[in-house]
Image (cartoon, rainbow, N blue to C red):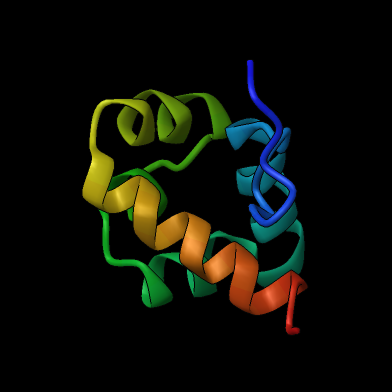
Length: 73
């Protein structure tokens, strides 16, 4: 495994990203910012992770929001 010193997401688990975003925004606001059913219809961390792991475009949006929210450099 090679080091990725310039990647702020290196070593950050998807579960941590989703949990931090839910803690910060809540499901309602998160679902408004990223319009996916996993955040808007009976949302749970588990169901969201399942969806995000198999949907690259949605995962990218979640990672972008995480970086924008918590890594404003």
